[in-house]
Length: 304
Image (tube, rainbow, N blue to C red):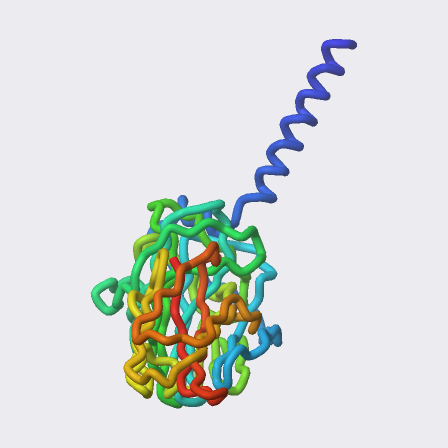
């Protein structure tokens, strides 16, 4: 009797462990290990729309977010965006399923359709080591972006982990690849594909989880500004050098994406000003420059 009871308890313990493991494994990761270069389609009949929003930081600069409510995942995700107005995409946050790793962002002008597994059609924006902020919360990918789009333009993105396996991103099952997921009046994001690295097994009807930062005021985000103001390097690690050819430029303000002032310098009396990082976290920041209380330039930079 004691032996039978021990066997029963052991079986219950094993089954519990298996169930817990299945809850932490993404179904696309399992299928990716079983299937190679096969597109898995699902059929559903209603669209999903989310309306999360991040407050503007500067005039013409804003963000659009799909969702961070994940129920699936894979190494990477591909998706299309279409511009409703002239804008520049300058940063991406996404939802990670790994604690850390090396990630890459690829892009191409035009839709991803017909080019899902054709790496020669894509341009690598860069790669970066990333530490996750947690599951189902935004994690910034510190890769420099400066993707200019005119109203009506389509650009495809491929965000992926490079570990050679199937894990990396969390995303959400959708209703149909190519279905419009969100449109905030400046930018549209569409459902796309989960994909293993690099450009391998595909799973359709997947909603990339993430946030895209952009500016519609495209005259205000370049590194070369009016009054011959330049910043270097960008992206930066430890410091930024601001060069002012007009000595009337007296005030520098640096803000985070949520509009919080992180730093200011007044009474600048030199043509070259060195801004030291001073412990600022990785991410995108905006600078504003004033002359006699009048804003004469603004832009963005990235800290790696």
